[in-house]
Image (cartoon, rainbow, N blue to C red; front, top):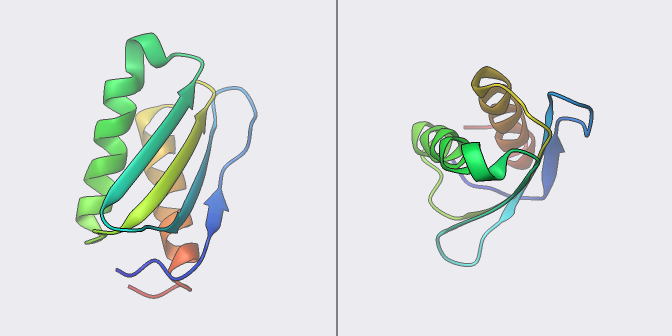
Length: 90
């Protein structure tokens, strides 16, 4: 999947996550801001990396603002942001 434009998914509400996806400049860059980063940043990063791999994304900038989202929510928000950023195509 090619990231064509900046797109986002999610909210800043409690137990949700806001994810922005933008075209990268060579590789994957993931920036995470989380209220639970000291305990779950590695897990959040792993989930995001898994979704990127599943969609074949090799070049993107990912900005994450997490408010305690569950893994299934992180995955859903990532998939939505990726599809929006690729203009709905795979």
